[in-house]
Length: 410
Ligand code: MG
Image 1: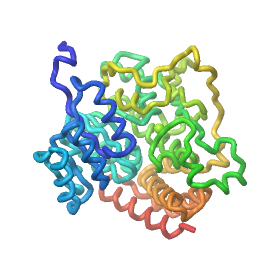
Image 2: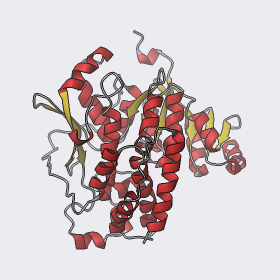
Image 3: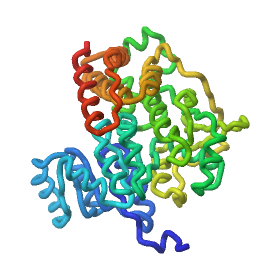
Image 4: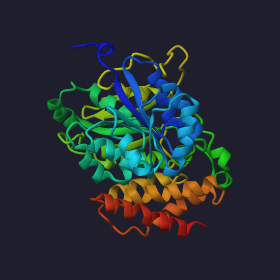
């Protein structure tokens, strides 16, 4: 087999390039220019940042959020000596970028990432997925797209990248062995840092500010996911995400693990990124320092390994690792997400949409932190039982849940 460094570099499209995952992907790829080359960037409206990124990676194509931004982008790219880069815009431009490379890294925030997820899988590409909301909201639609020949979904979410590795660690990689692994993997333990408010009383929680919620103790991430971590909604959504990734039966991309076989364990140090427990009682875990560049590198290089270490542990200084059950009373978003996962259909789309509206209102100072769970609970009480089998149903569910959420905002 030809060593990777002698083969042509694999092309990478970075969608959501100016966000936290996007900028870290560019950093990761810069370590291995012989193995990977960024050929496409997509961002919304942060054109100055996008132009800086284009100047450093020299892509073939860039996508901006809207047509009216194209003239400014043309000027900005000319100013950095990139007159011949193709510029596309809007949803068609995003779809074009999201099917344009060997690997598509989807680092978009929220439901807006769905079109990129579907475009990448429907084009038979590898999707390195950091945008969990698309998989959660559109589970059945994404599962169909995963069956496209060549399509491959490798999770970038650190917990799911950990589970992916723990499942592979148990057996050979050959497809035929998956049935054996599926029959022996019993439970997934998703770890949660507990966020900045772990151990807070109800009175303390009622008084937390936006600034408090954005001060995550271990991970550096964008504002939406950081607030989600503070409510444990991020972990609840990750339970649904894990069920979508690893729940389908063996032979159809999954490992047959049920939603209620996915447990949440609070682990404040964020060193153990998740675990899989097998039928004989053995638990396999994946550990590193919290550094998103590691799961990004894993998703790029899989089934190989990236030749640069990110987040490697110095065992001489690591010290202790603690584990405790989550506080389901003070952090009700966790069980709201389990309930949505059990209902299935469009319930995950509803909870994800309601959460996006509530978190945005919190970040804008319109509601309190404790209102987030209440808004979501009130929206979910209206859920109409839709199945979410088609993209139109998912889009309808998303907009309906957003409308309800706006209505019940205090
Ligand atoms: Mg995560």
